[in-house]
Image (cartoon, rainbow, N blue to C red; front, side, top):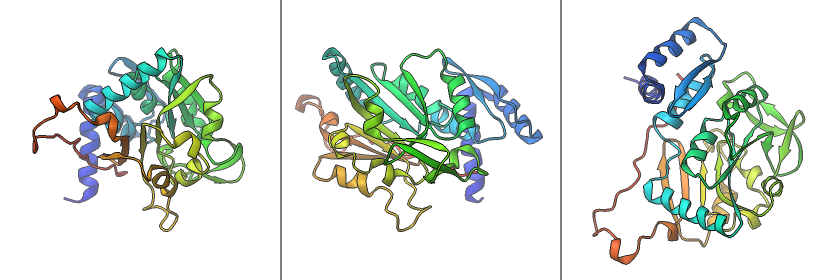
Length: 289
């Protein structure tokens, strides 16, 4: 069996976990019939829109079915303790979700980190409209129409003929561009708890000149795209910022997860004996059927 077949099974399984088999059959039937209109599904505690003919079902499978934005119980607990401490000091912990698509990842991260504000950035207008609907009424999510970039101005949306999860930006016009420092300045007394990026190759531009903001960020979660842009060195700035720090690196699905090692270090009395440590399992990467 080829890789595409296994990818299909992976996403079918993930979507079934997220919304149940009955709704899964309905989504797949609408996709087969070419019905583009969004439908509402119950996913955990949320009623969410999903567009059957776009990439929404794959994203929902990844986020809610297979938990590809989980960082393990120890990492999640550590970040939540850190965020709670910041709140007590009057500091707002912020998660920047760059490439939020229709909002599934933002909602997942909001639920995982109840003391954090999630800034959900999406450059595709249609996906952003669905994001607004999915996040309506949810506190601690701040939708932003635009693209994370190295300047405040405009960029151009590219790959507009592709499913929405594959659309990126480049130099040009048409879509507002925002910088990481500029985003954080929109709220008073903020501190970056996590940077999540799934921005189709714009990682280098998005993190350029962000040393002051990212020098001690506790967690960075990124989907690398060097395979799409050989020679660009998309994560060069990220690796440079992490240089000299003690960092644990995890892999979950397509995501690289970098988290400050001191947050994961257990007190000496509670450490597991050698050979019994548990690692976050790697998951199968997505592929468009």
